[in-house]
Image 1: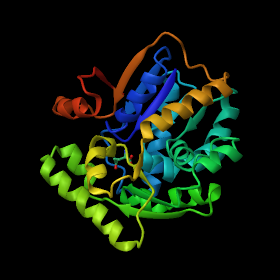
Image 2 (image 1 turned 180 degrees about the vertical axis):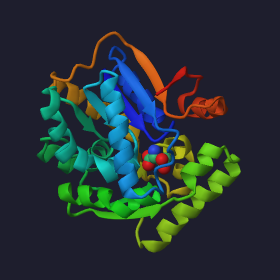
Image 3 (image 1 turned 120 degrees about the horizontal axis):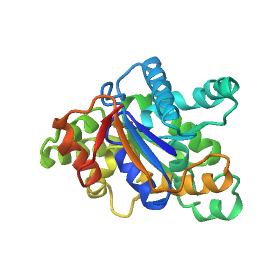
Length: 281
Ligand code: DGL
């Protein structure tokens, strides 16, 4: 069973791509709606909430969990992978792991994947400026620029926090207002740089829903990296390399929420395209 975790329902954009890529695998989704949004929370909260969510997914029988939230991935995942999971492993001897959505996105934008080299780098030599749009917390961590420069020090990375965007999408504010917000954030970024970005990372689970508005606001020809698809590709490769994680093969689907309310049904439909049977976590 593969666990997929997000602060709320936004991670359904990632979850859908994972299921489409691996339809025979068993998946359980967990949205921490009671504590969402994570984007403005202190890092220690994000860390504790992410650990609690992973515990819940492991209790459900997952051995591998995807942290499908950018904020949780950039704030908590490194410590979880390096400290928390290894310590936990000693308790019962079972290998469990958590992987995020930032590194797959960076691999997609730089063309440099796990243990890859030469030819992929050549292919993306064109990409010399990458723009990252994300929540305030994700931008503050600097995780995207740091990880991109580890692979491609020649690349310039510019970031733009979009503090109002995820919340506005969730609240279902009119599309005209969302367009104005996107134009405002894109405008702020373009005003700070004297070149046009080659590629853009939409580094928040909610932004795929407004990718068309970003494409319209950005100069023509800018490549937008699709985080859900990049994560799905990375997960497939990861499972090939790590058969020790039992991902199941019965096509099971479970949807859990820490704070489900029927008022959220339109929002779920927005992220998923259909109604979903959420259970209390
Ligand atoms: N899921 C979060 C992310 O990708 C966005 C919503 C939130 O702030 O919790 O950063």
